[in-house]
Image (cartoon, rainbow, N blue to C red; front, side, top):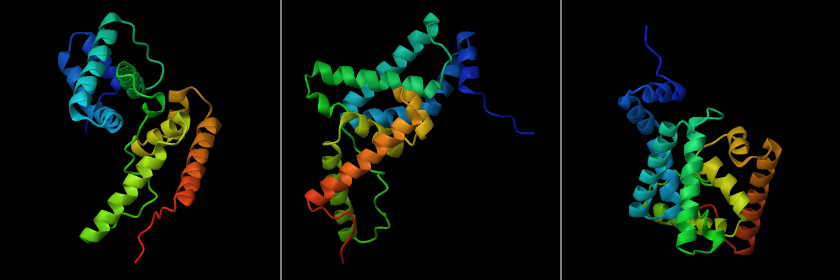
Length: 196
């Protein structure tokens, strides 16, 4: 009979009991998602590496101090830490606040990515670039839901928990984000499909 993988909570307990390898398993199981989110926002691998390390240093310190509580999912707590560190990074750089949640949403799902020719790939890349520019104009709350849903792959239930709003509010923000994107597409005369 195949043994089931230990849960995040079980790994945390083992780590706190002195099993260092449990922490490594825990980090490895979430590192891609956390790093991808940081890189998507800061757009710089060196800065992303630093913020990723800072995220898990904070995770380790909080676990060791006994300050971690088990309310909600571990990954959401880690993502919140990463998000806060990213915001701090932009504040230190004195960037414009609207840019704090800037996104690289390459999985926006408005596209059918069955590209084959070089021309198709170039057109698709241009569409993605146009979308990224448009997403910058969204209000931060709508942009945040869009990133969580389409890039990180979170459910609306998880998004609601993460952003401390009701599921209906999260759904509403997503609906308004899509409506705003469509309006911007129309106003800027951008095609989101290949024209042959």
